[in-house]
Amino acid sequence: MSAQPSAVVEVAAAVDDELVDAVVGLLPQLSSSATFDRALLERVVASEAATLFVARLDGAIVGMATLVTYAIPTGVRGHIDDVVVDESTRGRGVARSLLEAMIARSAELGIRTLDLTSRPSRVAAIRLYESVGFVRRDTNTFRFAG
Image (cartoon, rainbow, N blue to C red; front, side, top):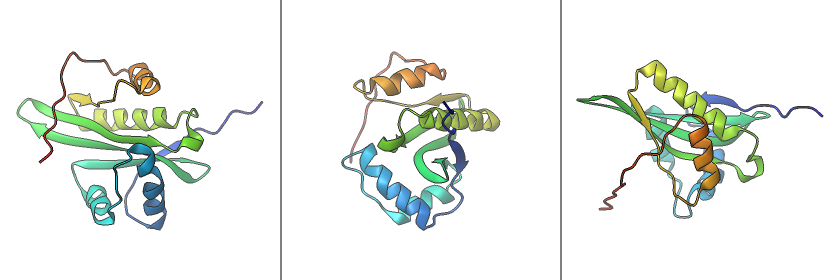
């Protein structure tokens, strides 16, 4: 039995048709309310505060996640958002590869803390987050939608 190839993770350096097609396919798997906006994707890829990571299997983009970094008086912080892996490739270590790449980048940048959130119903995702070192915090998350 041969081992499945591991995901190759890279930073999206430019918005091209391949990236657009991948994001268009991944967004509905992330959120039923997410809509694609190429101009917004271009802003993310060009941003100094956001890094879009993409994961490839056999050359095709099958996952993505965004690392957002920001400096505040208590230190440089990071947040991981929009982690999604194509349904057809789940269970092959793609999300783990994305997380490990973002954790490594965070260390390079001197990020003091790295946060992410997940709905309680996403049991497998929570197990994955904990397995790579994230610790559940006793906190409340608040959102203002203006």
